[in-house]
Image 1: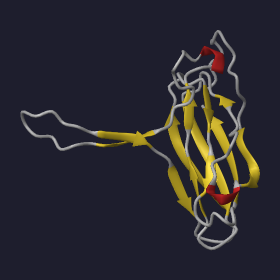
Image 2 (image 1 turned 45 degrees about the vertical axis):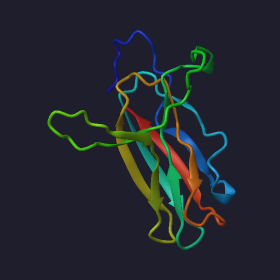
Image 3 (image 1 turned 90 degrees about the horizontal axis):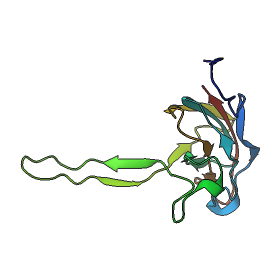
Image 4 (image 1 turned 30 degrees about the horizontal axis):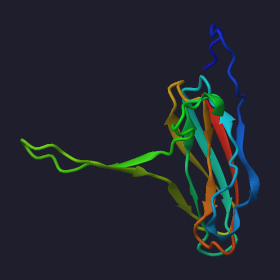
Length: 157
């Protein structure tokens, strides 16, 4: 939805190319310098991945990282610039006792089902207008000696 009454223009225009179509890094390494893109004022993000495996068993991992800071210079001393998504395992609830849940960084894996390019949508992810920037590092996780090709395109609302 376009808000013509907003005091500030948005810093993005759809579609946003978060990763140009290229081979994933070799040996299962994460993208060294994932493309950063502004999401200022966006409420929702939907991601479209197109993956072409190079060998049977091809798969890739991805992680949607967010930053509440518009530039690195705004990050407070000792604070992290980028936040990873979290995964939570809720502990057992027992009357009269505190419950401990476990939280860890998380990432997702897509496994190819064929040799032709496969496109899928991930999301929507709620940003609620509070996330300044995003990036989506990726890596080959299936056949790390023969990385596939991946493109990532984002649509912001």
